[in-house]
Structures are given as structure tokens and as C-alpha cells.
Image 1 (cartoon, rainbow over the protein chains, first blue to last red):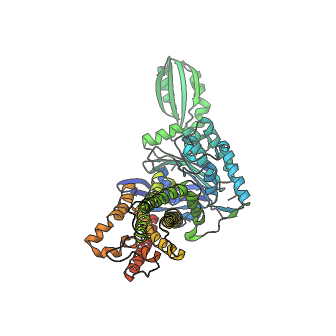
Image 2: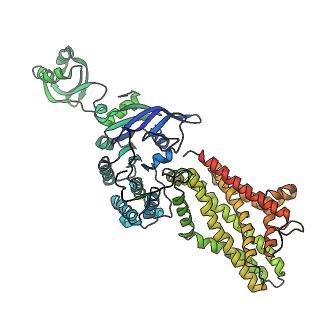
Amino acid sequence: MNQTPQNVIETRGLSKSYKDLQALKSLDLKVRHNSIFGFLGPNGAGKTTTIKLLLGLTRPTAGSASVFGMDSVTHSVDIRARTGYLPQDPRFYEYMTARQILRFTAEFFFKGPKTALRDRVDEMLDLVDLVDKADRPIKTFSGGERQRLGIAQAQVNYPDLLILDEPAASLDPLGRRDVLEVMSKLRKYATIFYSTHILDDVQRVSDTVVILNKGELVAQGPIEELLAGSEGVIYIIHLKGAADQALPQVQSLPWVSAVKASQHNDETVWQVSVSDPLAAEAQLLKFLVNGPVTVTEFRRKQYELEDVFLQVIEGGQNVGK
Amino acid sequence: MSGNEAFELVSERGWSRGWSNMLRSGLARWFNTRTWWVQCLIWGGLVGGLVAAVALAPDSPPALDLLMLFTVFAGLFPAVGVVIIMQDALVGEKREGTAAWVLSKPVTRFAFVLSKVVANSVGVIATMVIVPGLVGYAVMYFTKHFTVNPLSFLLALGVIFISHFYFLSLTLMLGTFFNSRGPVIGIPLAILFLQQNLIGMLPALRFVLPWTLIFPLGNNSSPVTSLMLGMPVQSENLTTLAIIAAESIIFVLVALWRFNREEF
């Protein structure tokens, strides 16, 4: 078996430009062995360009990328021999059937025995629920069926690295759930690098996330770190009563750094930023309960990936780099 | 890769990685689909039908003239089919995205292009050279009792293939330079149909265009006719044959070089 370095993918200053367009600007990435690496970004952020550079389908204009410790330009065939790839918009030979596509794909990696090849193809057809359509030509397949076939062909060679470009884009919710389950199962055997715009999926299965915007890396880190946010700890407090009177008292607390107040129906809502989370946890609620207000809701703000995503894309902030 | 212990891994290395699978797939596209019999029907029917129409006409020409007409039909018309099929080999795959998909597998670009050359050459030989040749020969035999030495006949068909291969390799090469079908079809077809005029304007072009392999020029026989009649091929025709073969190889080499620089 081939030795795999700790970082399956590593890029250094990876850049790509097309005429006047800078598609990727000096990208530095490290993807650890057996991780599920979510690659996020709006359309045109450079996600597909990065994937094509990793596979040697296109050449960098500056910088370099290595996969399994091999250079993506000089050893692209050796890299692809250990990789499974699902393109964003999978295109297959229309005259072939699903079974023939899987067989054709498998034969780039294995030359036999025939029974093992046949069994592997059947296993993949079963995995993506295409057994009953296995012998139909691809030209009769719907977008979702093509996507499922794409997922099957990407795994047919037992890849050490699975690169999926928008794997759940054309799937219904059940199909999406199945893909995420497959990804979770495969992490034991493979590193999964996938791009998506479905933030919920990333939050559910990824352990590391990168956000690209306009060809630049704007956030990178373990998912927990990104979800912790860059604004520090914030408490959301819903109040009734004399919130105006209580506000200066809260603002005067030494560990309160800011309070944003807003009105929601008949309640006042505060977002209290604190510099000492332990002190806040121990004292903030007690302080309010003893004051001229009634606390109807008190919670620490939990970030969703969508918040982080919008914050870095719209705010142009760099998080976790 | 874990889980693949049951398999025998592909042993091809270097430029040949993926070659056998690509070639198998290219041949299957010709012979495991309806392509082969559709092409046989078109070119066998067209060449055989035209030869039969002339042979059975009330004022039909003598066998020798019929043979010359046969070589013209067999050398000219199937070349149109070669161009149409070959424009799809690279431009079609680039435009449809299948080239990018295949090249994401462990296959070299060299193997990808070379498999297109070999698989399509085999398809062209079978369906656009041998079948129309045999049909045309059968028509000449049954209408004019015309017979030739089988080896001479095969050699003559080989020259027709060299003419077709010129257009096959030219179209393939153009497919590496362009992403739209227009110029990839238009340039070879323009050469195919205008080469007589071009040679008329600049006679030296007879050495670099395949026209004289098929068509007699002045009092000279074409090499195809000479071979079928068991006559020696004139040295000027041999020179043209060698130049056309060399040009075709250059077209393939340029295609390999250019496709290697292609980005997907």
C-alpha cells in the first residue's frame, strides 16, 4: 500500500489566472488524512478551479499543490490513480449504460479478475440505488440519476482521496441524506474533500472548513472553531419591564464590552458581548433577576455556519486563518 | 487503497497509462453500437449504388472507366464521413465535458489522443474502406465481370485509407486547436472539395494534398488505379504517397503536443 503523508493535500501560494481574471489567489491549504474537508464559497469563488488544479486538469500560474506528497503537475496521473472525483456537472458517454460507465471507470484502475470487477460494479449500483436502471443508456437518465452515478464512479476504485464538487447539488433531501451517510462511512478509509453551497450539509459532516471568496481564502479551521465565531461570547437576553433603567447598570459591569438593544414585539432584546465568559455565566443572569426587569429568555448565542459564511463573505473578514 | 486486494491492478505506466482501456472503449463505440452497420450501410450503399447506377446505365462505360469512377467514389465520399466522425472525437468530447471526466482518471493525454487515432482508424478501415471497396468490387464483378488480383485490390484500398487518414489526422489536429465544430469540420471539407482547384492554381500542391492518390492527373493513372490493374505506381505518385503519410503523422504529433497543453 502507498504511504500517505499526514497532509493528503497541501497547496502553497496556489494561483490561477485566465487572461484578465484572477480565479485563485495564493491559496495555502492543508487537508489532513481521513478528514472530511468542506470547501465553501459563492459561485465563482475558485472552488472548481482549485479542484481542477489538484487533479492536474489545469496548470497553476503560480505556486504549487501536492497530493499524497506528489506534485499535481508532474505526477497528476499517479495522483488520479488514488483519487475518486465527482465533477460538479457529471458528463458521461451518452451511449453507454450505467453499468458500462462503472466498468469503464473501474478498468482504469483494475484489469481483473472479471468476477471481482462485476461484483464491484454491482455493489456501486446498489449503493446509489441504480440497480433497476443499470442497463439503460445514460441519455435517458435524469440529473439526479446522473449525479448518483457520478458518486458511484468516484468510489469504484476504493480511493484514498475522494474529491466531490457539489455532490448533493441535484439531489432531493433523501438523496442528500444518503450522500452524507456514504461520506461519513467512507471517512474510515478515505479523505474527503468536497465543495458545496449547502451549508447545513457542511455543518453536519465536515470536521474542517475552508471558505473561499473571489479566489481568496477568507476562513479556514475546524468547524467548532469557526462556529465559535470571531465576535467573542454574546448573550441573547429577552426582557420585559424597565430595560432602559437596567441598561446603564449592565453596561457598567467590568466584563461587559458592548450591549446592542432592539425591540421585538413587547420585549426588549439585548445582545450582550462579554470579555470574561466565566464571570458572565456566573453573574449576568443573577444581576438581571435582581433588577427592575423580568427575564423571559437568556441564552448564549450559537453561531450557525450560515452566520459565519455570510459574515466572512459580506463583511470581508478573515476568520481562523 | 483499502478494499482493492481482490483486484489485479493495472500495470501500465508512463505514457501508456489508460491506453488499453481507452482503446477498448473506442473500438466498442464503433463495433458495440449501431455505428458500424450505419456507416457500412451509408458508404457501402453510396459507393456500391453509384457504381451500379453507372454500370447498369444504357450507355455504361467500359470496365476500366468504371474502375476509375469506383476509385473516385470510394476515395472522395467516405472522407466526408471521416471528417464528421473525427470532429466529434475531440471537439465533441471537449464541449460535452466527457474529455474532462475521462482525464480525471489515471489516463495520460497521450493515451487519450492515440486511442482516438487507432480506434477511429480501425473503424474507418472496416466501414469506410473495406466494406465500400468490397461492395464496389462485387458490383463491378457482377456487371462487367471485372476481376483483379486480391492482393493488388487490398493494396489499392490501403492507398484509399492513406487518403482518408490524412483527413482523419487533420481533423483530429484541428480539434485540439478549436473548441467549436465549425472550423474543425469546415477546413478539412474545404480542402477535400477544393484541392483540385488549389492544385490547378499551384501545381506543386499535388505533392502535399491527397487528391492525386485517388484522382488521375493528366495522363497519369492514380496509384489506386495502377495498383488495381497490377501496374507499377509512378515514382511521382510514390513521392506524394510518402509525403501524405508523413503529413498525417505530423498532424498526429501536433495534436498530441497541443492536447497536452489543453486545460479543462
